[in-house]
Image (cartoon, rainbow, N blue to C red; front, side, top):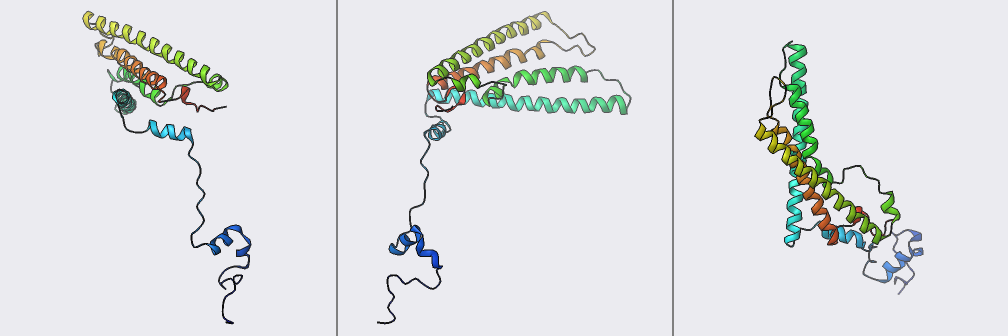
Length: 229
């Protein structure tokens, strides 16, 4: 038949260079489209995905509870900073607009700023917001990097526990002694001092959670990939 289409004949709606490409020839010869290009799964990404999964055991539940407490500390610290800013605005309005005296504002702002800094310590550790230099861990091999991470976390746990214990002793001493600030407001000092054991105690727990995650391979040393550098 004269109207029969030869194998080399192309439909008129296709470009002339369609048959020149390997993918086009594959599509003409087969009814199925070529398989899409799929990138292989990175093992490090797979491990990160596993760490984002819901808790599966007692240890995961314990770590998740500590992380939740650290996030609460972050919210509390942010709220204290915001409240301190509002008090400063009220202080300026009272003193320079109404020409009135201020009694408690300055001291309240100081206590809230210091308290927010201490209470926010575990959240900053959770998000790795502290200033750190990772040049040495990058140059170390995986075994040495793990050892350095363990030593670092143990030192962090020891320092935070030390400050928490002595902070608690200071709070008890201030409460039993009835210490008051030397201002007109006369704030009981055990209340602002309480930020010391709370902040450093929760920081100790966050260091502990990081340590447990590290030794059980739930996280990597310094949050670096195993093949970093």
